[in-house]
Image (cartoon, one colour):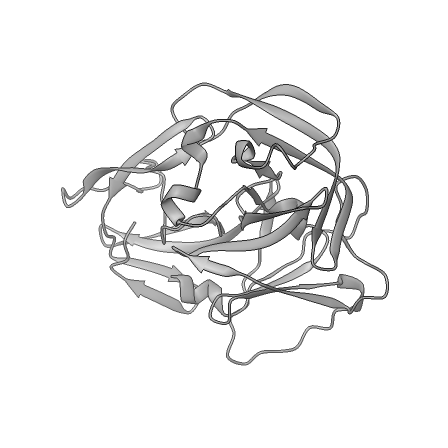
Length: 266
């Protein structure tokens, strides 16, 4: 599935400017190319927060920047205007305590924000560093994507961010174009799956922060259910509200416009 999204993914959400907005600094090129590391299908980019260089996951599934390995950098990273809050996300647990910090400066090459809000999570289970083998200090997604056209190229391992006012679309005969809808600051595409010999339309989150190929939520009313017993219960990952468990299996087919994948893992 990675190859379907990998060659070129263009996201453009809005051109409005305000708090938390990013911009390409004056005098720079109309686009900024950012090299990234690709580990376990996850995109890792270098960025600076208040002048301190960090490594973040580029995750289209998150709406606000999160720092979850703060203890390793708290001696050098100074955050502005902090207050205690509670956050809730995926997982079976309760909301967790966090710190909201306002009006921070973030730099990603020539891309900048001078008034970024971010959140600090102290839950050690959300630390990606031991699993990936490289320091990971947090995740960033929608706040970066919303003001630009963004190209993600997995095979060449770079992200190119375009100024939408100076961008010109080039027709690509070898590409597939898919409409993207934004809901609650997250991108979705329409596709379909074949389950129990039935084609079922599904709306899927495009999540660059997920290393699994495909997640489906069981819904008997839509026919999304494993009627066979060829699955096993497994730990799927950590969400903001605790551990996430599910069933690992295969389905007959995944359909994305003219692409079809047979027997993908889900």
